[in-house]
Image (cartoon, rainbow, N blue to C red):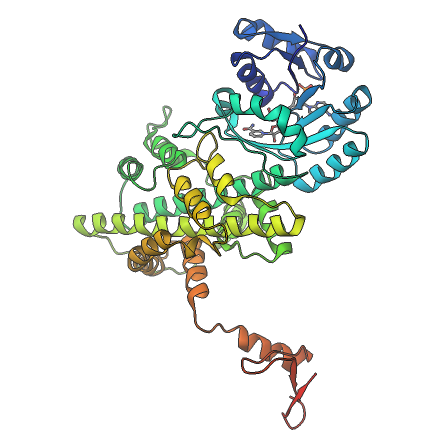
Length: 477
Ligand code: NDP
């Protein structure tokens, strides 16, 4: 029997996706540049379902039912183009190539256009959840044509994670690169979430004075409330882990230089182009980069800081509650910023993205899955023209309640010299948005002074310039 789907690229992700399809009853054709990987998969997991291994691209394509659906799960970048070049000449009109790698959405747009000219559907698909998600159910963000989703959707719905209400964590996100774009912003939000959690940890440790094991307990408690999420859950696991070799907390033996593969950076780069203030995501990317500047950090270690002040037991417990408020409020802001970027991308590329549906498919399977996302979905569904998450009554009320503690945490962080760039950027964003007047008026004055860039007035239409070098009278331009 012909295979209903094929997977080329059988490293951790491809192999687990193939097993996921097979476990759901689909016959899966298998292909990998190095055939040994294909054989290994069949040897180890052949009993899990119907696999059709192929060594050559020709055999792989011939094994698929028509219209063919083939997933490529290879290293993003040039390898993806190489694999497309290999397969495209073997395919027919109406066939579907699904790229499940972490492609940049601009590459996906280019590939989609090229393949569309040949009558081939190209579905750039964001897949989140890591290895485990690929096997047990990831969150899936397919772009491409609506037509391709009609045949592909039901299969993806089967293998996707299910949210608590049973809904599969997959939807047709939008045309061409929309799926990879949304996956990119997902990762940007993931960076911000991780940074905020990191700051909460550091404050609990350096301001409140708790050891990692107790902080793990605090995170575990938070995970039973409104912060309930995968990232909070694994934070407790990592913090309670003890290094076997040294018997010290694991978090104390890991080098404190965070690495990155680039999706957070892409999110910020695009935000700069779109003119969207994603300051929380940017701070998260910069914090990782700062951590890696070891020589600079070494050279700066002797710089003056404040005198540390130890908190009493009750004060520390109170502070921990405040950090929960600060973390929650900052998290609302970083999702606000991320969804703003999604809305801006949607407008720029005419994707007509459904923000509520995007929040809904992140409720399960992906790294940022959280109880909270159900409320983001509801906020967008209840009011499709919602200007921002901060305009949602419930979120606005929660921030109103959290703000005193949020500010107090930043005061303590500043006084004690503990960096909290994510919390601070989030609060600055919040305060800037609600401000009656911003110093942007002064900026405009300066720009007009040195560059005659002109300004608009609050009381009249038009563009104006002050003759700064002359009698300082105003002219309309
Ligand atoms: P890798 O990113 O490590 O890629 C390895 C696979 O790519 C192998 O199958 C390899 O074949 C193949 N490959 C590399 N170069 C070429 C080439 N020039 N021609 C043909 N095949 C090539 O694998 P992962 O499973 O980690 O990830 C696959 C994709 O999924 C990536 O794009 C990744 O960014 C993305 N992704 C990964 C996640 C994760 O948690 N790891 C999560 C979500 C997405 P060979 O065996 O012959 O070397």
